Length: 169
Image (tube, rainbow, N blue to C red; front, side):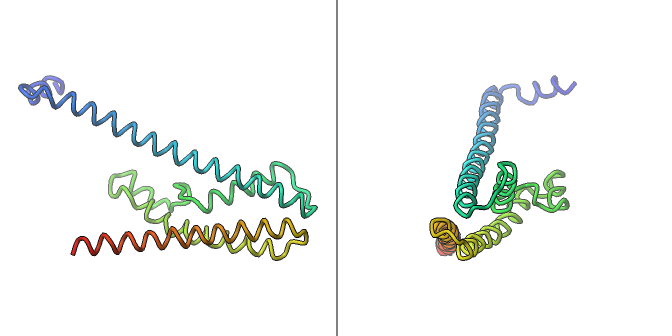
């Protein structure tokens, strides 16, 4: 049987099983920690967007239901973050069948950068079109902060990539 064969193969090397189990637990913990941190960041971004939109629409005198605001905020967070559901099915299939592990990630990073930059621009435009001075300021500030963050993050990635390339040469 499989268990008998496994015992024979591992006979004389009892350290393999405890180390393998510990590494398996570490990997599971790391995956769960990453997943929860991803969810935490998205929930924080969602709540921030809900608060911003609620305040903006109130100051502008635009009536929106809580559900409409949550839907808009959810769409913004989904579109501007790495989201597995936004990955084309053929790329997800490659991961599912073990052809590639990171293709959905590599697809999503440029998509997210573009969408987030467009969202920053949209927020600035929202502010320019606003009639209430406080709403105008809040939307322009929100957009400029997003654009600055995108620029800094992208520049950081470029600089890190150049530094790694230099170190490897």
